[in-house]
Image 1 (tube, helix red, strand yellow):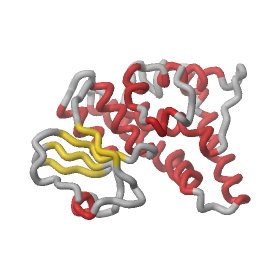
Image 2 (cartoon, rainbow, N blue to C red; image 1 turned 180 degrees about the vertical axis):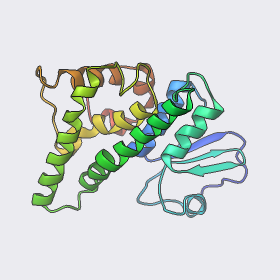
Image 3 (cartoon, rainbow, N blue to C red; image 1 turned 90 degrees about the vertical axis):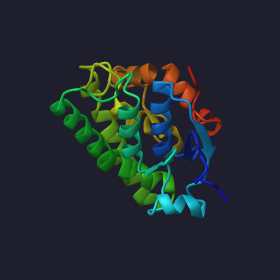
Image 4 (cartoon, rainbow, N blue to C red; image 1 turned 180 degrees about the horizontal axis):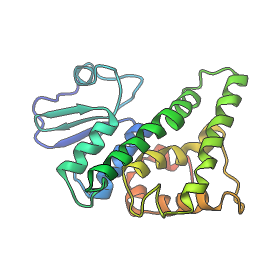
Length: 213
């Protein structure tokens, strides 16, 4: 049984292979936040965690008397609680745009990625979903030509959401060719995957998914 009531420091309950948990770990590493990392399984969540996370999802963040679930909520909480370096723009319109990008990524990329990662699709359906996701990912090449990060000059919460899925593409049967057509995407992945905070965020299971450059 996990005890939450007597914690005096920040703790993240995180599945070591889950991309939603990974995005929060990137935020923690990028901001240099000291926290206890408690490995949990999204398939076997402790009953006490279920009291915080009613939809039986990870990650869950406990920060003394604050208990939160939902990865986007966690990322925004950490960005506001530890404002440097900022991962959301200062201006309201730009912040709203970042939130919209995250929502679109979750609806378009995340929904398909999760179907493939769960492994419950029949072969024909999995092939269709894989093709849809690859098409969506490759279509980002046009956007990645313009800015060093996703629709932004600075690393942001959008990148924290995208990077864990891109890192896991080989594990769901998607390879991005190393050619001129896909160069912006490959450069983006190299740029993000070699960031110290990204490397620090990786668990042992995640390191086995790809080579760290």
